[in-house]
Each structure stands twice: as structure tokens, then as C-alpha cells.
Image (cartoon, rainbow, N blue to C red; front, side):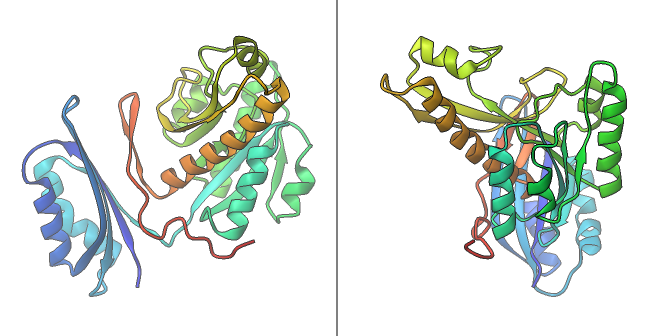
Length: 294
């Protein structure tokens, strides 16, 4: 039996949950998981619901049945079949830890996505990607050819039907035009030192300052570099005994985990944009289960 996901955002007011629940019940749906948040500062309401249509109701019927309530409460809503995997393009440069981690999670089913292409401005990971039967595109980027290169990248996105771009340590700044075109559909990973430690070798800067926590941040990409809405963050403790090289190794582990968790939240429709911030609901039961162990 299929499970559908309903996502809702609208102005906050009394009766929204009752209207949604009533509509779903009338269509023979059993609610198996539900999360909601009422932002009192912005006056916005957010909700994610997993439902099982026990009487065979399909997505079109569910969509039509909710339209009266959606009109009444000015809802922005969507139904999704949770069995349909999101198509993803991964972009990488010369740091391969996040790419390799994502490929492993994808291979064992821990990240239920379809990786439809990997794009890089270097050839370092061509063999790794091709060995996974994934198309690899090497698109060199220079100051002169940047518009042409981004057009080729977007052609890959369009041709594959990709719904999400993941920057797995892709060391090129995307143009404002590309960021706007893919707003809310590009996820990046970086060390959490920004903006405190900008520029070259942030881990050495952190080491020289004697920091006790290093970490990583995953966020949506916007035209404001590294200032997009944050999806996921984590840290790890370090001591005076660690070297700058230790910082780099420990940081890579955190980066890989944070990026994977951010992607997991996005593909399960758990992330809602809320101005410059995000609302991120907890994972549904069973959504972390892998198809196989290795």
C-alpha cells in the first residue's frame, strides 16, 4: 500500500488542522505521521503529513478533495508519492569525501534518491562515478567561459529531469542567475567557520585561534554567498593536542554527515523555507532504514 506525503504552508489561523484531517479522512486516508509548526513571528503555518490511502484514493483525487480547504485557508500545498525517488545531480571538484559518502549511502539505500549525473570541473572522480553506472560530465569553468559552463550544467539538469543539485564540495561560485533559477533546489556544504574564518585554509585559521569546536553547515544556495537558509549543522570537539591536519580529517567526517542529513531532510519533504530560515521537521519512522547493509 502506497504512502503519500502532504506538505502545507499558509497563513496561521484556527481550523487548519481540522480541515486537513477531515478532508483526508473523507478520502479514506489514515494519517501515519504528522508534524506542524506555527511561527508566531511571521504568522505562517507549516505542516507535513504522511498518509496511507486505505480505500485506493490516488494523488489526483487527494489534490482535488483538498482544494476547497486550500482556497479557504490560502494554502500552498502539494501531495507526493513517497515511493518516487527524487532525481539528483551531484557536483564536486577535488575533495571527494562527501561524494564518496553519498555514493555509499545511495548504494545501500540509506539515501533513497536517483543520482542522474555527477558534474565536475576536474577529472579526478570520473572512474569512481562511472564504476557506479552514473553519467559523469566534466565541465571546466574559467572566468571567460563561466556563462557557457553554467548553461551546460543547466542542460544536464534539464535533460535528466533533476529536481535537486548537491554541491558536494564543488569549489566554484555559482552565478546569481543560476541561484535564482534553482532557488530552494541547490544544497551546499561548508565548514562552520564562515564568516569567522573566511579565505584560504580555514582549518589552519581555526587551529591558530585555538578553537575547541569545529563543524559544518549545510544550507540552500542563494545569490548571497554562504548565507542561504540553513538546513543542518553539527560540531565535533577538538583539543590543543590536535594538529591542523587532524582538524581537516575530523572536519571532513562532519561535513559528510551534515550534508547527508540535509539531503535526507530535503528529499523527504521535511524542509520548509521560512524567509531566511528553515523549518525542518523530524524524520518519519522508518525513513532512515537501509535496503541492505553494504
